[in-house]
Length: 302
Ligand SMILES: Nc1ncnc2c1ncn2[C@@H]1O[C@H](COP(=O)(O)OP(=O)(O)OP(=O)(O)O)[C@@H](O)[C@H]1O
Image (cartoon, rainbow, N blue to C red; front, top):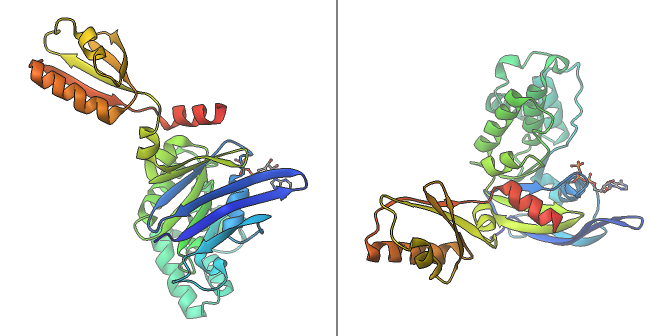
């Protein structure tokens, strides 16, 4: 059963529709990347899901069997530009956030220590936040989003402003968090999405262009390429490969035959059957994936 269902979610500002009837479900335990170019509507979507702004139309439901009241109790949120009290220490800040979430002082202290440990800031817990690096602040921001044990953790561009080291630290942390929580994070860095997320939502001009697992989205591409190489080049190989229905083009790249196909699963089965029955000595069989960047650019430009 899904953790959250979003139906026809829409946000209009005056005449501008910035989120346009988007529908999707978030499955528990998944890490989902919300992708889209600048101005696509990512922050607006995340702020509606977190309960900070109201939709103009549409609905957001948490699984009703588990939750019955205000969604905000179940969502932890890291804004794109988090603001801290720089004169506080990391520990003080987390305890303050915990008390705002109705934890007792003792509960807040113990949760703060647990999370400082998780985000690897225990050694810096007495340091003023003003002296933190960008990566440390972002990790503290993630810790504050977890203080009330939310079911869903929403992170708005958690790595975009960080240097490579800070980025790596936060990506590692997301990878760890996804063992226990459902995570939805926005980014326009496609490698990051590919590296840590299970599913993606691709938003452009307020519309959801693609959604699903990264693997499914790769597989949905219209065409695919399979690279083949053989120990000894079989005779009339190009003509023979073109006999397969789903193969629509064969070209050469050095020793490789580059086989363009419509349906990769079909092509794999038929190519391997042909190669085996002909006894051709195969030395390479490689399915080239379109990168997420290719898919993103194609979807947005269409
Ligand atoms: N309060 C508002 N009033 C009017 N327009 C708004 C408001 N908030 C956002 N917008 C507009 O909605 C559109 C989507 O903005 P949003 O911040 O959600 O995009 P985004 O995908 O998060 O972009 P970025 O990657 O640049 O942060 C933009 O055109 C923005 O100008």
